[in-house]
Image (cartoon, rainbow, N blue to C red):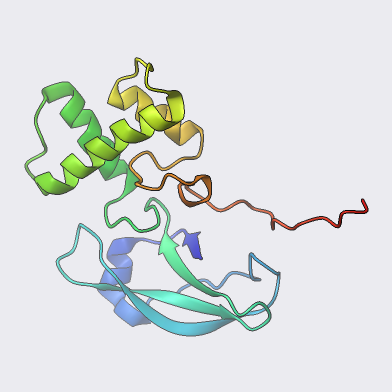
Length: 168
């Protein structure tokens, strides 16, 4: 599970493993105590080298959590603002941004169009920019490839999902 924290990617890259991470008070799944569990390599588009992100382990539910700076979606190396700027630039100029890989921008563009059709229907008359904004408002990652409802949300729900007994 990815836990988003207020941290600067540039500071994390500059300090490396010496970055002073703030440990969450408890496990978001079960409320148990969290222990430091080493580091994991992550890649961000603003750096040509890897960055080390902190991992946490819950001894109660045995879950491993990764701390990631806010502003980045799970499984994405570019920030959400950078993705939105690329979509807006493409919409207004009909050209790709020269400072980002063209293949990555094409992938975002195609996935955004697919997600707009999936969520709003085939007959939706939305521009990519409008669709991006509306998907964000619905808490959906606009450029995701996931078609299943559970895998495309920006953040995990703040509550634990449990099954209720049949007698209630």
